[in-house]
Image (cartoon, rainbow, N blue to C red; front, side, top):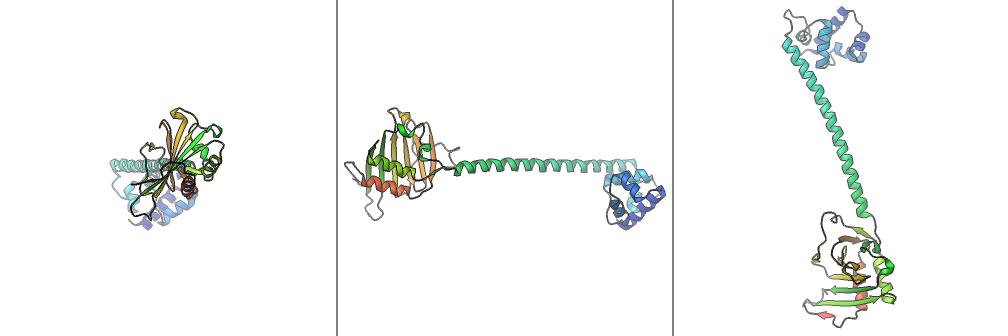
Length: 273
């Protein structure tokens, strides 16, 4: 296809019609520079524009594409086909725009959901926010149990310590201070992974279990288990609710285990494995 030849032919047709480039541009709804590019051969009109030009200049499309007049008239079928192609092209552009808008909207929604999840995940909680249905002043008893597996002992004995703290004594204040010294963040698995009573620890050298009571009914106490240095399970006494958390202070497990060991009031602290 000789674009320069086509451009010269378009220029001749325009002049035969008695139109300036500005007048043609206004009639076709384009810029004058666009008409100039057609006529210099640096750019080709779109198919739908070519059809309009063929009607305006009373020539067939094959004559325009060949850059010279032909004796045979343009077949109507060809013209209709070109028009259909042009319509299809416009429809394709519209579909593409709709697809881009839809994709942008989906990306925006996903971004907002991700931001909400991350804010929820990293927003700090206090210790009391972790306890279901409890108020600080309603707590009456804390039973703490620590299990320690000394790595230097080759016979794999288990050291277990238990301490009971009552409201008002020194141990009560100290254990609450240790629990409140770190902020807690919810685990991303909470919305999709129910916390079962059998959730335990593996390959951990220390665990601490706390039973906090503020009444006699099952729903009036909860179990908090530090099952690793960065994972905590919180289960209500009736096991109707459970959550996983992370402490901001990862040494908290060591501090709790040591404090329970020092305040051990159980009758047996050495249990063979």
